Image 1 (cartoon, rainbow, N blue to C red):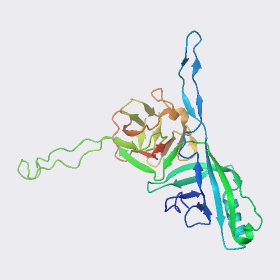
Image 2: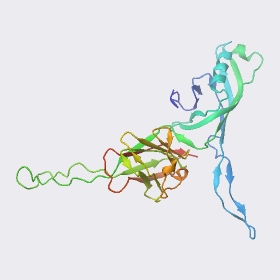
Image 3: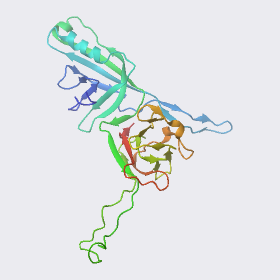
Image 4: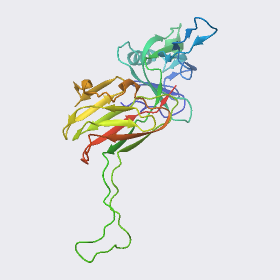
Length: 301
């Protein structure tokens, strides 16, 4: 099941394959930590010989999200089954699962989290009546950012020369025909990547061969990632800027091929707004099969 497949109405919260909210056995009253800013680790240090401090980096801590006022409803005598389904969906585990929240008519947002606490009070006669009230779920997301549900993708080819006007030199008399035919436009190697959120996102970048010395440059800042490697036509080099990894064909690390022109992968982020990138390779490279693609989700605090 894909993330957010069950989310269709305001008030829906999907974690894994369980759905909370309207028209479900699980109703909730409050959601804390979702729209709040996460905790911060501050690198600010006091000045030794003056008032104030030297401002340092602010790094967000994991996000804690709590669903309170959970009410479980079922047919009399069937609450236990509903509880078991919720318990199975929120069981302790090492892997983070998609947590999707839709609060109103705006598009839902996605986080990856683990359920770290579940509370289901058992009241006298409640199970027999088909109701359990006062429950709570608590989640922890190691990445405090929230993301758009839809992953976007753009692709570019290496720059290609344009054919220009056809002067009809062979066969037939020399001259231009009407309407003027400039030929198919050549590739530019440019990628336009919009991040509609308010937080920096970490894109996934794929270089596909045949190409030598592939690179991607942020035209606005000059930041570049570049790799001293030759990719065959079926090779793909995946750069995961969040994990800081560079892998060839899904398994072999090629992080050692990074050139001294590159910035660290973890800093090659996608800022809020629209970013212009340029795909380039070794001088003279024009093979139309070579490509670079960028995948990302808009990120929100």
